[in-house]
Length: 253
Image (cartoon, rainbow, N blue to C red; front, side, top):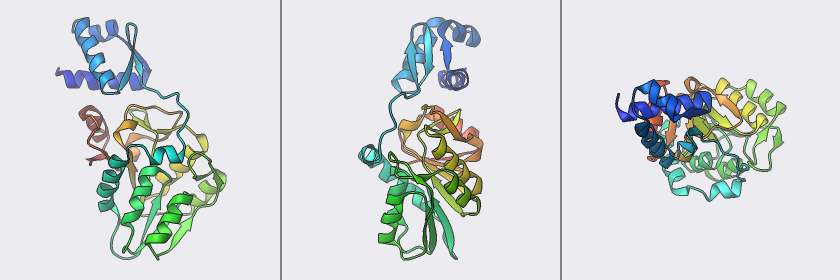
């Protein structure tokens, strides 16, 4: 077994069980404990796990969810590249519908709506305001309770409104992506994202590579429910393989 294969299996075990031990892994893969320690050190340096005495635990963030201004100023170059790469998935032809989830990366996609015959639907106040500046086509803002941290409409009214829609393509953000699926910390926002995934014809996640390996409170989509992941070149080969093995087209911008 190649080292990269073994490390992917270690990541899978962490996503499944939350914790692994050096002794257990050495026995499982029939290697010496020093080999496993090097594997864990390599994975930690890539930001894929947290080393603890005798093993490792899954990388989970306990930090408060960053507010929108903070996210707008984080990883901006990568988000611009992601948006450019994602723009090729915008539908063409007769009037098509596009659903844009709230998020700093999905906001970067708005600039590419200009000159397209698109009906745009969003749950984000900021995205709606930006879209008004670049498109004269129909624009719909979903109802719901606005979350302070994301400026996103969420809740029962948002989910009900989405249940009546059938957008051709949905561009969705996330806070974490791993073998546990695509995750977010807020229950109401997760329900809204799940409704987007359920109703859209094609489901595309936009997320920079810092989200890989993070597991937030709520899974809003299993890996097999997403068609395309557009991310940046920092996404590791092991996570790229994980997503592709689950049928996701991975674009590293």
